[in-house]
Amino acid sequence: MFNKLTFWKNQNNTSSTLREKIENIKKLPVPEHVAIIMDGNGRWAKKRSLPRIAGHHEGMKVVRKISKLSNRLGIKTLTLYAFSTENWKRPKTEVDYLMKLPEEFLGTFLPELIEENVQVKMIGYKEQLPNHTLRAIEKAIDKTKDNDGLVLNFALNYGSRAEIIDATKRVLNDCKKGILNEEELNEEVFSSYLMTSNLQDPDLLIRTSGEIRLSNFMLWQLAYSEFWFTDVLWPDFRDQHLLEAIEAYQNRQRRFGGI
Ligand code: V0D
Image 1 (cartoon, rainbow, N blue to C red):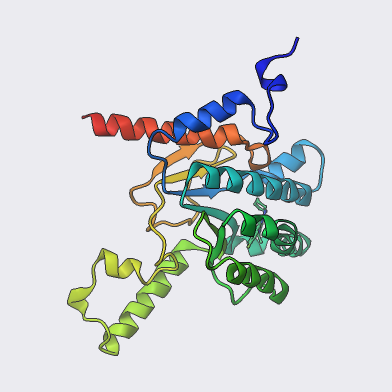
Image 2: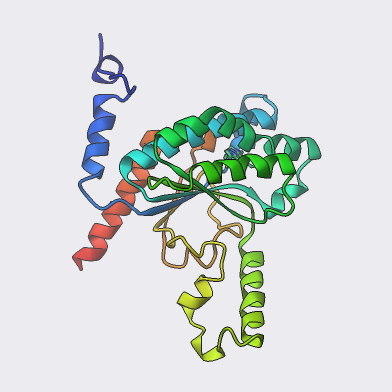
């Protein structure tokens, strides 16, 4: 027998129930900024006796799918933690492979991102990135800078404590130079010294693969965010999982507003 899910697929490959779910979610406010720690790529590969890089490659395909859905849902900013300052400690072959992923991703999907009005951004320390990686990202940033759809913000070579220390140093420097008075420093001013200066704080943080910690990710920016954790490994993360996280977010907002 045909069932609703397998039979009634439209060209967009969306089952009617998934589309209904999307329409329902769009009736309530969606989180404006969603941040995701995309964990579990290595574990996904290990379970299949594949090399870790196979997990990273599969994870990259999920980035595309989740970006498309986020754009469709009207999420304004999607920040994806792609590479931490700690990740340099991994084997060189793995790091070298990871640093080729932005080129591969953008080589395939940049036309699609432009078509969908997505704006690519990046936070993190650009200095240590290989030239080929940085060139690909900066080209994408430039080619999408006038787009006003989803902001697809990659956190790459990013670490939150280092970001806060650097912001503090620049605050002190501006005080010394007389550009800033100590009395003027408040949370809003301090935020403007962070790498996220032109982004709002995330409303929702998602972390996959069963780890329940922040691992030095956006410590300042996540102060008031809702957190949603799942055991699902990032390469197994599907549209339904993002919708589930957003539904949980909307239910929490509703309960919070109710009292
Ligand atoms: C591996 C799972 C897309 C997490 C997703 C350099 C780990 C796939 C990008 C990407 C990575 C980055 C910038 C950009 C366009 C795409 C990416 C890295 C890892 C680390 F402008 N996926 N992806 N970058 N993985």
